[in-house]
Image 1 (tube, rainbow, N blue to C red):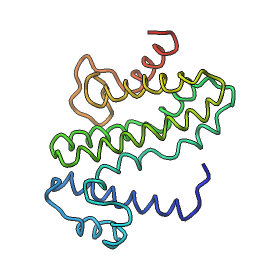
Image 2 (tube, rainbow, N blue to C red):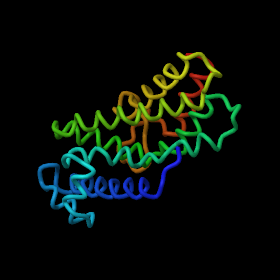
Image 3 (cartoon, one colour):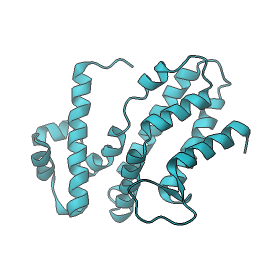
Length: 200
């Protein structure tokens, strides 16, 4: 996906606004600030904010999408004959880092605390899932049956969501509440992909 300077600039502006909104939610709570506070912190106008987001909730939720860079560069740099499972693992290691997942986990906690945020978080998750699955489909081409990409992606997405929601006890660096049964993120990825590679 070839993006021009204008698109890159627009994405950077949106991400700056999203980070400001996310930080303000951390500091003051969702109801402790208004859009004017976001634009003041980010250094943009209200009009610029309105060109990117419909409300502060959308901006807060968008911080997660911005932390996942365009994975097409990673996928195109991989060998063309690399199995799709290994390509997906490479993307997970490169893009879905512990920092990204920590932000996403915090965002999900915020959504539980502030119900008006939840639809926007779910929307961002859906957008991320759709974008990633499309990219995987384009890399897979006609090497696999049409059902393979959605099944593979669904299994990995389900495992990651279980780790984010706490159904699986996965410890991320920077978290203090470590249980004796917790596995680190790298082990979680290895185990998940071993199961997928060898069959459940």
